[in-house]
Image: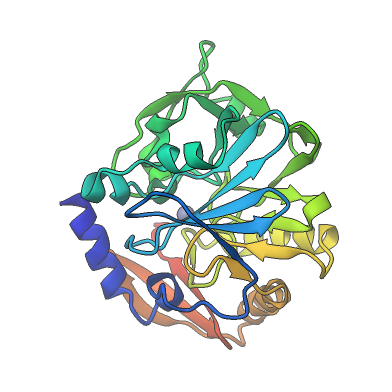
Length: 297
Ligand SMILES: [Zn+2]
């Protein structure tokens, strides 16, 4: 029933979340398909030991990422779980076909559609953010809240095995990645930067599709994060999101900056819509869309 609901949500948002629901758009991209045994997941090699794991049949159009070092691997998100409920397949089974390295899970953020396969992973790393440290008990137990997940009540709790520092090298053996705090879509959101590969994995902060903001204050937070990303990234970087068509053109980051300015100045006006029973403001700017929920009162 849960997944039926998600599919209806996706269909009902056609026109709002167009790209995320349209799995057929695939042009100007330099991917190398990786053969895996799966009835659900598609795997593409992005280069430099980074893979994207797509779920083209899922209602959320999920994209998770696998990064390999010499000694360990990181999986960035686990998908929305429709694989298991509908098809009985496991994302770890896909990863096992790519690498025998020990794998640690990092969630781009805690929304339900990124962590429904969390039980498949034995090692879970958290970004070392004070707000998360404060919520983890001495034995490492972390309890998810409803507002963390946005929808549903799974997962309820997990054990944190490792804390990853922000904006400092995380050694995977023969390569390093960094985590960057990218609040805006959600407070705990992080991106993974692979500087030597000139790639950044942005989770739900920026992807090809309507961006979702949950509180009015998030507009200013988004702007602050865009400024930070612009100070760190150069146009050689390839950007990747967590829904829909994975690669995001670099120019979209500047366009998002312009979009947020347009909203701030009052030039971009919203239309009202009710989404998932919650009133929302919809903003449009060229080919970008922002949905801002009105749930603060
Ligand atoms: Zn999200």
